[in-house]
Image (cartoon, rainbow, N blue to C red; front, side, top):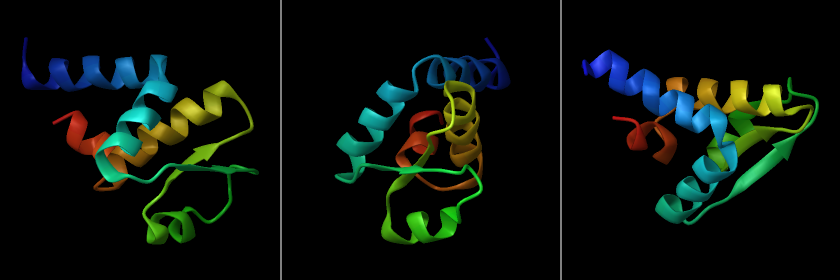
Length: 82
């Protein structure tokens, strides 16, 4: 399996179970998640405190935001998929 396929597989696992990814983030950082609604809330404020922002609008939004967070920020979620 290529590195790209491995990363895509790991991202699919995170999207399928965002609660586990959030629990892994908490275990690695000692900090939890902050629910944001609407999904356009300023994530920078949450990132500045070291917490993981999670959208509350729908499961699709939460999964998208978790993957977006993993792609854009140096967090435990991103470290987990390397």
